[in-house]
Amino acid sequence: MPLNSSSIVNHLPFIQTTRRLFTFQSHHVNFHTFSLLFSGQHIPGSNQYKSKPPHIVSSSKFDINYSLASSIMEEEQEKSLCLDKSLEGKYSKELDVAVRAVQMACFLCQKLQENFISKSNIQVQSKDDNSPVTLADWSVQATVSWLLSESFGSKNVSIVAEEDVHSLSNAEAAGLLEAVVKIVNNCLAEAPRFGLQGPVIPLGTSEVLEAISRCHSNGGPEGRFWALDPVDGTLGFVRGDQYAVALALIENGEPVLGVLGCPNYPMRKEWLSYHHRYHRIISKLTPPTSESWDKGCVMYAKKGSGEAWIQPLIQGNKKLVWPNSARPVKVSSIENPALATFCEPVEKSNSSHSFTAGLAHSVGLRKQPLRVYSMVKYAAIARGDAEVFMKFAKSGYKEKIWDHAAGVVIIEEAGGVVTDAGGRQLDFSRGIYIERLDRGIIACAGAKLHEKIIRAVDASWGSSSL
Image 1 (cartoon, helix red, strand yellow):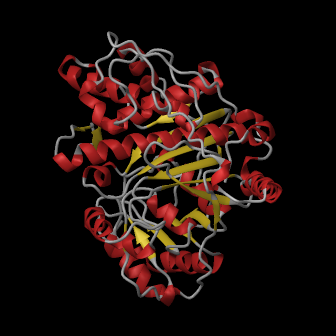
Image 2 (cartoon, helix red, strand yellow):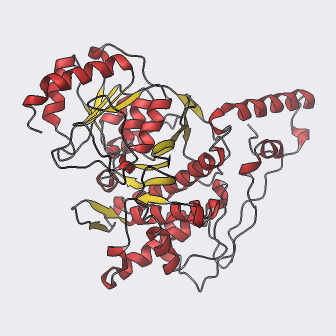
Image 3 (cartoon, helix red, strand yellow):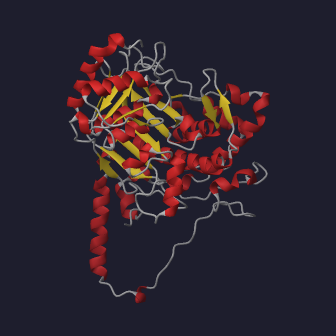
């Protein structure tokens, strides 16, 4: 389908991009160390990143009716223009840029996981709360921050994000910082493939640190800000399993856009229950299909549209052409608890497995729980791969807005319900934490299942010891 034709661009003027080649002077940054991350893009001895010339086929080789072909082409273009209604009207440019930025971030993460984790050569640091942070966390935050600021102007962009630059700025972290700078520049060199504009020359160390530290907003009830989790589920990332890149736009305390990149999200529901590395092996032993394990996807939705969408991650050296084979997603129609699947966090420290097991039994959920890292749980419900997500953290734990905002928008627009355990909407208007949270978080595919879970929580909370 010729989605990159000029007629498409004319219909969607806000996605037109400057198609210039970006010059990278070799004396600024040595890219050799990370050339494997983006192989095939940098031409040794050249100061440009070049694209391949179009392949021209002689029409004499084919016996086709040109007018019929033109008619089919126009019909397919019209379909593509109408395919993603979520880009119509308010927040259209914000959603377009956000999806492209998350696609780029997933591309960065896939390369890092493929080339480093498989070799057990990734640097993992511990934050003050003992949670892990990696090269990917800082690199994605810098990349997305820079792209948003360039697209909308740094004065117009406020970001709440998970990582800071303290541990990255000290003298002992010089090698780590150098690695992050190289990864960010290698990723931004690919920006034209994703329909975005990259830097004319590579970013320096101070510019990368500035992009990361720019994400210092405290949120609040007024104005507009972005909530970013650069790598949600870092443990999943480190272990070669599920993780997500989450980006949401919050306006006056309410999430209005949600974009969720899931680089390892399998197209087959049953594969979610198994370890990522196992199915990487299985997929290599079977013929490649459109439902291969490692395809990956981006889900996104706009508040009030009544629609949520999924598009595959671009693979290899392909270009992102909007809407990139996007299709709508809907939550499951299953209402019988005996047929429903519920998911919960992998780590016991993040949620009480014993309490959710008791709840599941009391409402008639008979299937084994689907334990998945990160906001992939939200993606599973939005796409109909699971029906219930329950999380009940230990006393004193505070949920952060970037861990939920994008997923909430996507599930709700896909037809689902997300509230706290008291049935109230999650409050994103009080800073970086979801304050006044009633016991836990419950997301369901439908209202009937949701009501049953709420009643079960009320009936059994007294014995929960949470």
